[in-house]
Image (cartoon, rainbow, N blue to C red; front, side, top):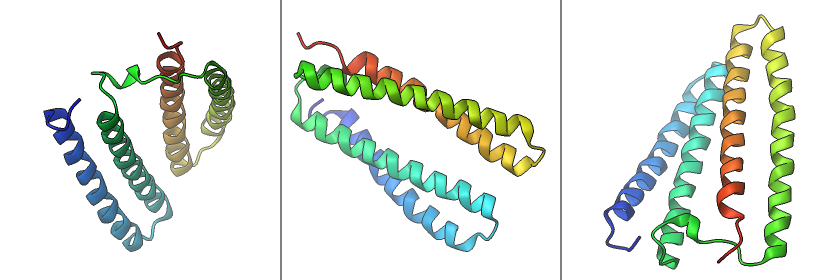
Length: 144
């Protein structure tokens, strides 16, 4: 990616949109008094904050690297790579344990709001698991 790349412009536009959404959601959070709704709005705000940071990092990486693909920027130190990979694998195990606990709550409660919130957490944990697995697979390869 280069500074003139249309993808870079789209990432910049997305970053601005996410940052604007954070402000809108902050305002909404202050106006809503239902705790379940407030929690969901908070999550949306945090997701938009996260998405803006992802865009920011993509732009930084694109500016520093020549490769066409972001995955081509790999960790060069074998020791650091193995330590990080092991930590990420531990994280996957912890998320598996958390997911089992969350699924127990979902199965054992009759409270629909609680079910909704914990189902949402379960879906996030599944996404996190996939993302960490992808990071392990793509980022922690030996550099050529």
